[in-house]
Image (cartoon, rainbow, N blue to C red):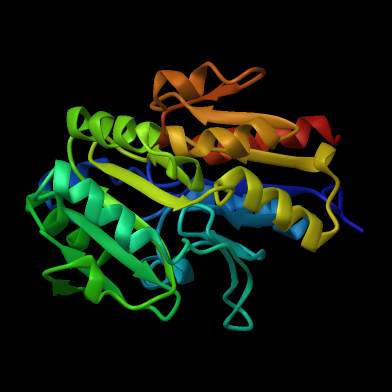
Length: 282
């Protein structure tokens, strides 16, 4: 028996476990998870805890890094559209976009032609429409093979999520467009970076999937701890018994009720979080 039996940590990956913003901005290589963070996670797991990652990344993108992530729980992928078990190589739960999404995005592109976005599927394939410099930077960061399409209509179904690669002013315009549509409520539309905007099915967010993950693992909500840095992490932080955020998180994350502010991601925020949780169970 370990002191963390029945305890779940769900952590965002980019800019929470590892600072990847620099690689996204400049095209440099992504840094490794710090030794201090790895040691802390390994201690947590050795004491019976379950450590999972809840990421906006697609399966092929996270698959390239997960072997270097000390973790023993299933992974929340696609910003909350699926739970995937890397040990058995199968999805435990999915919530993909409605088939009407292709028609709705065509309406969006009529008003905002030329928007750059990636299309993610459950079979490891990724397509890109109107790729721009941000698309190139993102693909360099994730090392994901991508096929360019000239129309979303050519993308196969089901679609797990869409990822728009546009700066914040355009992101705000896209969000407002969805809010004006009668069908806008069918979607979760949330920023995950200054350059990235996530589109998933209604209810397919990190909060809903971490809740589902806890149910699958038979972990009570009072023993769930979450950490993240951006707006797409807010739903899981609000679900957590205790939410955590690195110092580099955006202001809306720092304003989550009850949030514990950690050091910057680059200063071993995960290790600091686990020290706090350790003190709760001593």
